Image 1 (cartoon, protein in one colour):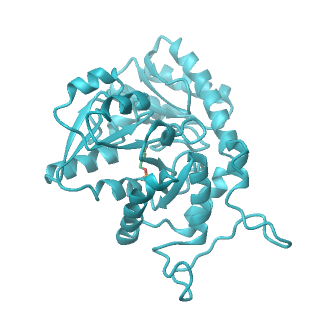
Image 2: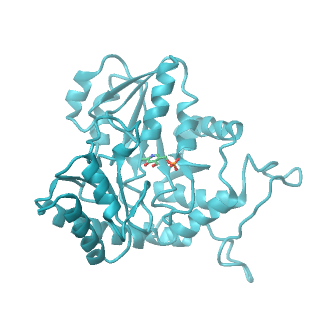
Image 3: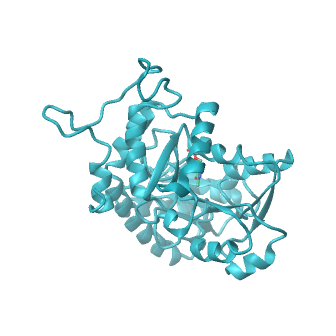
Length: 362
Ligand SMILES: Cc1ncc(COP(=O)(O)O)c(C=O)c1O
């Protein structure tokens, strides 16, 4: 099966055995318990519908996947298990939930967190270190600043001086554009709530570890965390995620093409001061020439785009991130994150154009 392209494997994987009369699509198996003496005894330990989606996510990432009830539950399976005194190195701005959770653990004296610009030259990152690092947490592209970290270069610079473990939150990049295990990551994280599930109707998270022996210890630790924290996703959400993933390749291509078209238009538009877009993916961030209130007026003037949080769904969303009081202050007040969906690019542009006119009068 690995001889096939990822676009094919995302369609062909996680299906029932090919025997006469078999259903082509996998069933949903809602059960909380099982007849004794089988491979799984209780649903907090495992479920066939969950295993189906894990098989496909693991295959796309080139490792083994475990799924969780949300991306944050997946992040917590790592963060909440860190030994006392773990020194974490991470970016200045990461996804707000992870940012907050790390802050809480640091405040309680469990971990220390050094936040630095991980997009800088690795030698500058190295020079900025205040001490050894146990865990490097990279989010690339980052949310909401859409900045890209050169993870292989950073890992090559840091590993000789620190016996560090590397986690890459690959939610914005997605498995069809980047495979962080090939960069030396020990764990890859996805909020499958976003582009993997793709239809804004599911909460699901995933952790992927290397398939070989090197992933065994992490696998055992995160499996145990999932059982003990009750982080299993529901069979229905797992099934819906796999259902959504069948079109991942089509959605990824379409959304990225439209994001590129919109980026070009926005970059040429005098009403917009700055457009952040890494050249791939479906998420960009704009800073219109206005303040926070003006940016609020802009998102409220949209008729096709929804003024809503989240990203990676088929419908386009726009959000002024600083509307959340605990969003890191390094995020500009008027920054609007755009998650580009699969609608016609011309309709998305004309809606943005009219809303920009409302917020930034010519
Ligand atoms: C980059 C990133 N990581 C993790 C998460 C958390 O995922 P969830 O909302 O599924 O808990 C999000 C959610 O927005 C995210 O954008």
